[in-house]
Image (cartoon, rainbow, N blue to C red; front, top):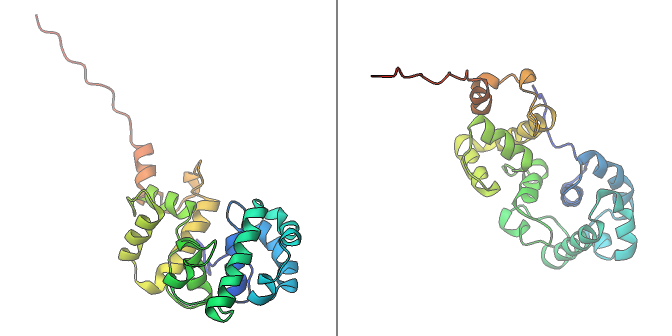
Length: 207
């Protein structure tokens, strides 16, 4: 269904993807993509972003929502990159999640799409699709990530996440379009909804 699936966030390197992914929280990739071209032209690396005027930056990213929190996060992240990693994005989960504004999902996005390190980001779409299909039983993103990674070879982790995300956006929405889904016959959610309702068994009265 999704040949060539990949992140829809526009980026040219790991730093740009890291910033874009932080900005995408509670926003859409399309909205972020309208903001980042001018942003990256002005702040092309961690050093320039770390030196940004916070009030000015807030206005530059305002369209992505939660702009005050996000401005502090990306300036803090850039400052940490400069202070601790020579301005470069580290290629390890442990180092990435130590950066301000970076959790496992963001780290996995950057690792898998920009640094060549297997990662399986779990967002609300991945969580919804995989639990409906019956591929995962966990109730947290980290638990679902562990379940999915155990079922797939590492070189498929990032692609699998991208496909689940696109499927969640286009087909398996909160109100799912099951009639358009090519895997509905393997989907626990669909099969449960489609199962015929049996009438209750009437017992004969005995005298």
